Length: 155
Image (cartoon, rainbow, N blue to C red; front, top):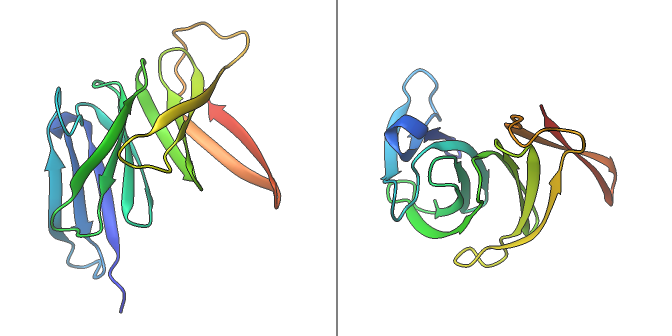
């Protein structure tokens, strides 16, 4: 049976915690990556999205998107980060791009994460007619056609 893991972004604990939930009656701790204000930049860890061997974590106090190698669940490793200027909240990853909803500024920022050690900003979108202080904590991407995506923020 394949292992099933839960990835918990714990903003108060400055951590990404990995829990084996293969047996739902007996969840077990596997590993943790902890720290804020310096590497691994997890102060305010809020949103997490997992693809393959990587977890993408929005840290809304350290103001960054953090990429963590989770190929060994007992030893998660910081790989890279990119500053987001404002509070990161929801994270979604598709292909080589991470889509991050920012709390302050009601905006969506898109990062190229093809190199996990050096993610770069590709673009951003400010929700029209919204004040810079409006909260935008979630990102939803839904397929319209095989090659088209609707991107929206939950406000």
